[in-house]
Amino acid sequence: MPKIITVPLIIRGHVIEDNLIEFGGRGGGLTFRTPDVNQYFDQIVLRDPSDIRDLYGLTMDEILDYLEALGPRLSIKTNRYMQEALEASIAVSGMSPDILNFMYESQTHAVNRAHIREMIDAVFVEPYLERWVDRRLSDRNIKVRAFGSRMVHLNPGNAVVIALQSIMNTALLRGDSIIKNPSNDPLTAAAIARTMIEMAPDHPITRHITVAYWKGGDTAFEKRLYRPANIEKIIAWGGESSMQHIRNHLGPGIDLIALDPKNSCSLIGADAFASEASMRNVASLLARDVGFLNQETCASTRTAFIESGIDEADMDKLNRFGQMVYEELQRLPKEFSSNNHPSFSAVLRDEIDGVRHSPYFKVFGCKENEGGVVVSQENEIADFAEHLSGRVVNLIPVDKIEDAYYGITIYTQSISIYPEALKDKVRDECAWRGAQRLTSLGCSTAGSFSQPHDGMEPLRRMARWLVIEEFDEKQFGNSGLMYGG
Image 1: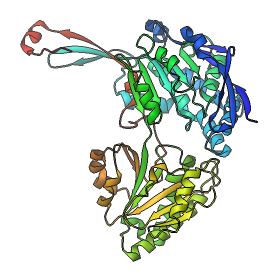
Image 2 (image 1 turned 90 degrees about the horizontal axis):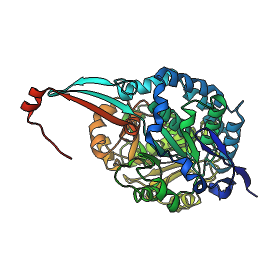
Image 3 (image 1 turned 60 degrees about the vertical axis):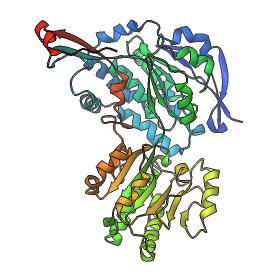
């Protein structure tokens, strides 16, 4: 029997556990009961956008004080709400308990004053979040400021830190957020919000966070919610079908910040084969990009293009390298990666078994749930490469690195590269083809919120920008600048 838990509805500092309806968690390992959001719709939405004025009585230092005080309180060693969230995630996640323990405890360090200040300064450059910034243009003086908005966050279930990041972004922008729990992480956002309530129940930041669950694709509820009278921004992590569903509800006045699923790859130059020691080192780095967090993130490498050459001797060398990558996958620390994936895809296993004895592929591993390496014997990506998961990577040989460009598209998020000097050679071509991030091999999953993500700066997009203009009459008369729309 699946375990049954209660997922509270939290509305701006109030915990609600009445009018419960039942849902099944992803994978069938959990059933949860949660308040029917339709019964509380008028409380969930913030009808009057000027009700965020209380947040503008806070200085940025006071906001950072609040967040810094929150961080240590999120430890799973002492926080019973976070312990419950971890237990629920173990029941429905594609990650092992060791990995989830690591991810949850890492949240106590994510709320770091220096890191948050670094993010603000990197994204906004000028202090637009703190005051009106004066600027002089050719024909006018302007003042610019970034304001918070009313947001809905449709968070993913494969990265528990996103729940905390949503709350941090709301606080920094001085906005109001409705955070939807994903079915494969039903309690994390609620656990953080309950911790906030215990820490500072009447604080303005606490009073502008709502956490709810409704079934994805609930047309009746979402049709009511996704209106400019209720919200201005939707920050959505989701697959193609869910994104299309959201777009069907959009109209003028609502900005969709779409963080759709992406694929990531690696480009490895011929220098990797300089020696056996070099091959082993590069195999270890690639294994990290493939196996970290069980390959559950968009930044995880699924295909790796190797400048090995494509003749028979070259393929012997590449196959030896593939064996090394498989061995290094098995050596990854258990808090980062699992040798026994809890939900390895049966469909993917069938695909791999179908090519295991093909002359066009050589397969290392993938016999149980330990992951593995599929080495293409020609310069072709495996047909099933887009579905690689559970710590499985496809290695593709190329004569020269330029022959790998066909594998880079607008859906490519991160490209990890070896050696470092190769970045300068490939960066423009990767950009033209749609890639969004070039990083060092072994570091693809070491993302940062202080830099662009998915080809944009989400925090800037979440803000509403207001400009005040002041014209000099002579300048305006001589500028000849007129526009409409």
